Image (cartoon, rainbow, N blue to C red; front, side):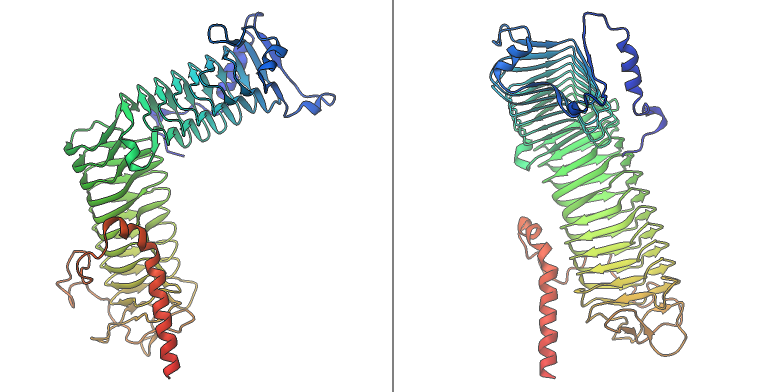
Length: 573
């Protein structure tokens, strides 16, 4: 759940029910009041539906006025429905035109419409406060859902699925436990003039809705979420929508754009080149910044606060993320980038990762503060990382976690006071870990798990890590080295007895053969370590999309190769 400042105070849950129930006493006697209160005699009706219409003939059986044609549809209106019903109004498998209007429905599911003929459904001016869902319409092309009020619904306010050419207009949906409005697999739909606020997840989601139109929608403390393949985004028309009083930016195939004045509260940038995003304040929305299939992106001097997801930067090349503040978000989001620079940022108190890298290549992470998050840095299926001069402190789990990754330099970082391991390597190889300070991590300073090989750990300081055990490091793989062979110098261990090797926990019985008696000082032995990603693997070997597709398997293949070499070596012996 996104954080909300005082100026956007959320009305307590269920208070809307109190207002609605008080207003019922003022309704005129012309309304049809159908409240149901369960007793022992009628308990068999619990979880039944009040109005169930499964054929055109059922409209007549209930006695609804109308003839079912376009000029005189069946009309279901002015009902107040409450009690232990599964559905208030349940209509399916019909071909006749009908209107549901001016009803107040407070049951598990308010209105369900499924599998009706094209252009026959109108749901207008109803009030719903259902414990599960407000309005759901499936397989009903051309449905019209207009001017309804959905308050405090349990899962979502309005859901429209497989309903092409539909109209969702002028509805107010607030405080859904999941999403206020969900539209999926409904191309050519018009979603206009709706107001969404305070959903626990998303204000509005659209997915697989080619050629949809989104105009004049207003969001308060939530926002717009469009989830598509990159070629489908360009079919959308997105105009004049706003979050917290500021516009939603939507840029597709626009090059050489600079956004430098504080303007947007939510921003989509898709298939763009040479795009600059600066000085924006992304506040209390869903995915605040979405950058997809872009190149040469400069993101600098922005802030993210209290968002469901701060940003998502996927399948991009040449991205610079510099001097930003990312704090107090439910989720940080992630980078999937070829050639990425993350420098001089402040990642603080996010309810997830401080920083997440996945399926990325050639990454520089330099001079960042990553503090008080659930995780510090999480790296998955990535290679050629250079992580230097960062403060990674007071996170609830790992400082840095590597999974299925390779060829990384981790140099001169302070990785301290984390509740998990300082660095955790899982199925990760060819890392060089030097001149880092691991201080007071509750788990190991460095933990190496199975299938993580050819890692080199030396000239680090391990001080008071893993205080309840005998060793400050773990090695459960082989072919990892805890000292520099050329100089015969290892690491500083605060609990080293001053003689013999320092024993490393783990089944392979690793040891630092040359512990240091003094704290290592960065620059004394290697003054010219470059602040660039390692380049010892030559030119880029992978086509861009091929890299993103293949890298998750790379670590596993490497581990298999090393295991086979060890078996052959043992056979020779």
